[in-house]
Length: 64
Image (cartoon, rainbow, N blue to C red; front, side, top):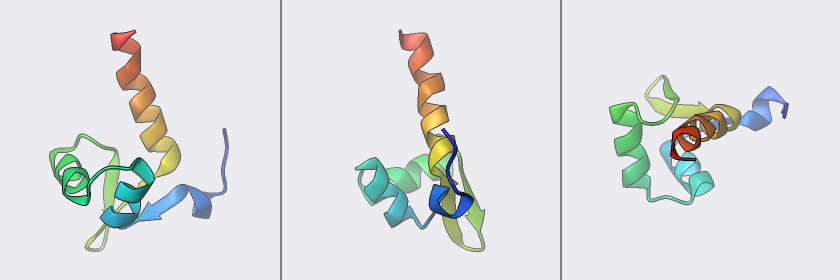
């Protein structure tokens, strides 16, 4: 699946949390601990939708 770079990028923990349907605090914790493939742009957390989906796919494989 390929998407346009601008539509794939999410900036802000609140935006990412809404997309994941998770509480903001949980996503912030996961970002701080390195449990999500997120990165900083200045002081804001950011991530790519495809990178997060790929990360979850990798986590699913051992459980299957």
